[in-house]
Length: 112
Image 1 (cartoon, rainbow, N blue to C red):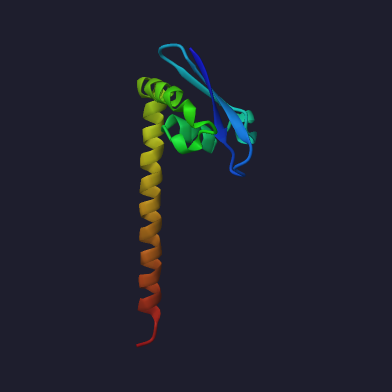
Image 2: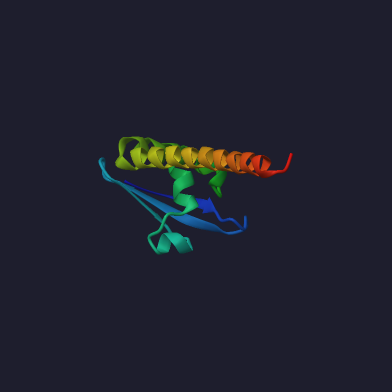
């Protein structure tokens, strides 16, 4: 099955086409933004596979997005997306810890 959704661009005026091809086992996701054309990770693909309705250019495409998300859950894309989200959360927590440790070090090096 093939579905195409329009995702909002960061400028808010244009949109990109994100194509989903599902064969019952494998999900292929293609975006026509600059990064997508180069075969790279892009926020449009990532957001839509996570079910982010705010990325849709046309809010009436919600039911199609819900169908795509059901495919994601059945495919390796779902597992990989969850792994990425978990890694991003760990990174964010580590960044907060580094900032706190730097502040602690700064305070420790101040004269009393």
